[in-house]
Image (tube, rainbow, N blue to C red; front, side):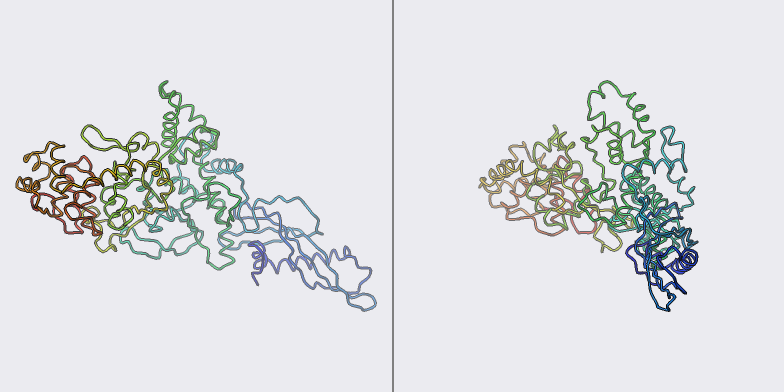
Length: 610
């Protein structure tokens, strides 16, 4: 039978019910031909039925009811032996059940068509019709069925136990995507799916049974328990609400729709300008209902009152810290992410929370943090980031690349930089944002240090993209005058390398003994650096700058005066890193970093550079 139809319900009817519908119409005609406007006839026959539209699709689990409106075409012969045709619109009420396969299709009633009020609970494509205002009710029904305790007193829903109770199987051993595109997958049929093996890093075809939920194992490691819980409950909602959608798809298209992979949430609210696909709607529903299952409206206010009752007067007087603490404790109690907790509180009427900034990226593929080694690898690969760091636009502080301005970074009495309170409260506009990318180390050609990642197949690295940092650059423009001024002041300095070194020694009160202690360069080098005709090696200048804890501006200045500049090599990126990433740290700490970079040949800074 042809799958012609304007939507999935019409296609389902044509494929699975046409013969039964034809028989039911013939039977109805035998009993109701008198209702047709025929004065007299000798014989009649059913010529054709034309599906006009469907309406009132109501889904209940695997079972569904719907109404079909047909135009019935009838041929008849009158008493004068003349042939005629006539048509009549009729309405047919049908019941069906699809549970992995077609279980039944029955015609319950046939009658003359009349306009009725629409009362379906699903679209003709089998997507549940659920408004945002109805999501709490759906969450209530779910909890009432699987964990009613959460509706009477505050409790963390045991999501894994609920999955088992629903007859589902959780698997955590396979990576679903190399770029964090997908967090989870629900399989609606016995099938095969492509995954990445955690141990080998190879792509493989995995056999999964109906009801298997695959959870990316690094969700917990790279994000949080709250993200893992949300991903699981998200898949449970898919099974509860969207299983029929998948079963019908598979029935119609012969196995081409056997699993549903769930990306990071992107449809958190309705934008009337968007064209939403059925999958978009289902993702939005799974996100919304899932959040309400984890934090039901029936108990959250009670828990809020319990938590805030123990807050000190001092905490209550600081509204920002008050709500940050509340969010943290609620997230810990319910096993949710802090960001999801914040959104849920807003939905429940705690409007003050909307202005609270929570630096969690549970559902994002980006982060603002990056450690020293991964920052070095990114400097090696990304010329744009390297240029910005080399120009002193950013300074590396507390695992962030922060705008190099006094509003964003300050220094303690030992000269070690730290993020200002302003920067901490405005991480997104003060620091560089990186995209998380999962790297297969075994296939990276030895690029990544075996010391750091020995025995690991995959590791998450951060990648810089200037387009992701538009907001940060806009804010940086407001502070650019200071950078420009300092750059101009440096450009005015026209003294020689030797004289500039003497200035630095004098400013920092450096003698030969202190010089050796800080730079590991010999006393002989100390003397040579003060001679006008001395040409130091590149590594000697770097050791000097690293040991005396000079910033990237001064380092570039000294390199230029000595006839050098950082190039595009990994070795020079490593040297740049020891200058930009270890402010306030000794040359020993910086050499330890260089020592761990086994993928390149690079000697420690010190006497060997003489």
